[in-house]
Length: 207
Image (cartoon, rainbow, N blue to C red; front, side, top):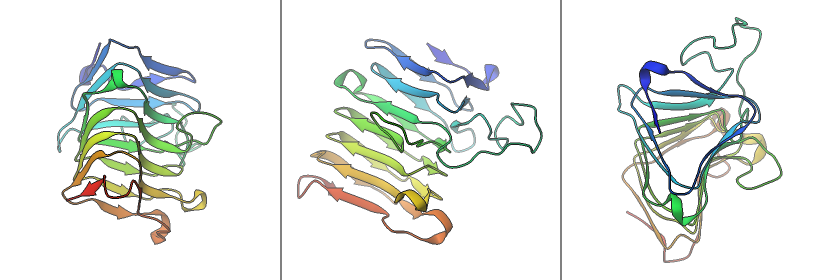
């Protein structure tokens, strides 16, 4: 399945959109996907999302008027807030080989009872590449790596919600994680309790 710019924005309404094992979701540059309050994206197969600097791929809240305008047609009566929707999760080996390049994650990381709560992009037991992406206005943690083999390069983590112990990036285990290039951390209201947390000893390393 391919999401194309000319059909944007895509709206996901209070459901979990799943990419099943063996399937591949391709997202073209310039695509905007808006998620309603309880909507999220779970990837059991593979996702290849490649934006460009000029035309990033955007995953954001239904209430975010900055991208593709006032989708819900209520003017300024509603606004997006950190943690409006659950986020994106990849959580088994079938999602390995996924790529996120020039992606903007906004207003994700809703807290709930379940896998990936409070995380904009949650990865577990996969191999992925993430580069040139922005994690902003999240409800808690921008990016979590749990037992992941990954190349993480040149990303921005900013304005994530301080009140829930915001983290730019949380690395657990992940002996194959390589964090390279320049990562920029600017957390909510200028207060940064944690920018980067690593609990993987000497196996995970940063270039």
